[in-house]
Amino acid sequence: MTEHPVLVLNAGSSSLKYQLLVPESGDVRAGGVIERIGESGSDVADHAAALEAMTERLRSDDVDLDELQLRAVGHRVVHGGPDFSEPVLIDDAVLDRVRDLSSLAPLHNPAAITGIEAARDRFDVPHVAVFDTAFFSALPPQASTYAVPRDLAEKHAIRRYGFHGTSHEYVSQAAADLLGRPTSDLRQVILHLGNGCSASAVRGGRPVDTSMGLTPLQGLVMGTRSGDVDPGLHAYLAREVGLSLDEIDTLLNKKSGVLGLSGVNDFRELEDRLEAGDAAARLAFDVVVHRLKHYVGAYLAILGGLDVLVFTAGIGENSTTVRAAVTEGLGELGITVDPARNAARSKQARVISPDGSRVVVAVVPTNEELAIARQTADLVG
Ligand code: ADP
Image 1: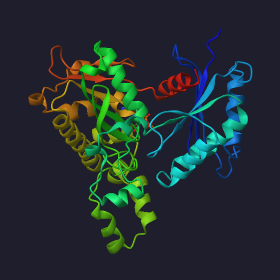
Image 2 (image 1 turned 45 degrees about the vertical axis):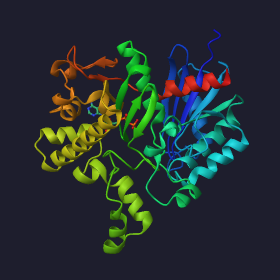
Image 3 (image 1 turned 90 degrees about the horizontal axis):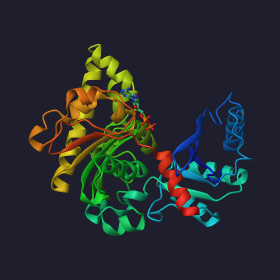
Image 4 (image 1 turned 45 degrees about the horizontal axis):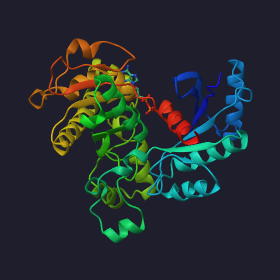
């Protein structure tokens, strides 16, 4: 076969997700995750060891990475800062620039760099970086600009970058395909609801607004992240509680959101508690839904109307309850779901609004690995 696969890597600080797939057909040869990298008691010391563990695992599944002639490796990189609005072929200069962006994404970019370095040592093929911010680099200035002094913003690259861009771009195209209409015709709101959550407004295939900002902390309520709070909260916590900036950052990123409100961060567990009548779970769920409605309404106004509302990622694709709650009471805006369609379980992209609705409500599975593999293959030719 001439269809050589692309290896897609997503390196976190203690985990390495991988998938081996053929971009043209979408055929997934293998995939998985190596966890507990560098943790005490783990026999995976670093990302180089993780790649060896991955190679071994693939071999035991009869996939020999050295024999099958990899076409390229595609790396997910969270923050492309102001420099990267497209996927790039990785060389030393690119790696240095990604390293320079670490101050904008201290939790994410250093891990990606470690993963890229180990993978370049291991696989002598082209390596491509695909940035989570790239799609949103085309946001119009009124959406990407924070109302802070302009010289400060310019000097320190302060703006709304947006994240999950690979997913929002893929899903907006897939939703248009589902409807058999070109993206150029459509005003879409995409709700990417996973462990991290973000909303976007997309017109004609181009981003018009998104809920995440300078960092992936802004916007929707997430598993452990607060999303929007009054920016004055930071100063208040510092003065009243005596927390340091790092402590506040950790509080809002790791201990807030659904976890901070209910004690659990996994949405399935939250729904179990909701069913059992747990009051904290009820409030957490209501806060999540209220914030979602807030963004749907805002984006409908910014788009001047809406053609498609799309749910994606773990919660968006699977939670009938969230989809019903977010769309409830929006009939006047043309947004309704058919209860039976909403409740039907499927792995396929599907419409859940009644036939003839003004706004099509759809569930569209995201596939960031496939999107990264395709962008990687396009770049290396
Ligand atoms: P990530 O952002 O890490 O890629 P996912 O997109 O896989 O995460 O989403 C994970 C979230 O999806 C978790 O909160 C999980 O509980 C939730 N989820 C997965 N399946 C269901 C389900 N059947 N019902 C409700 N939530 C679900």
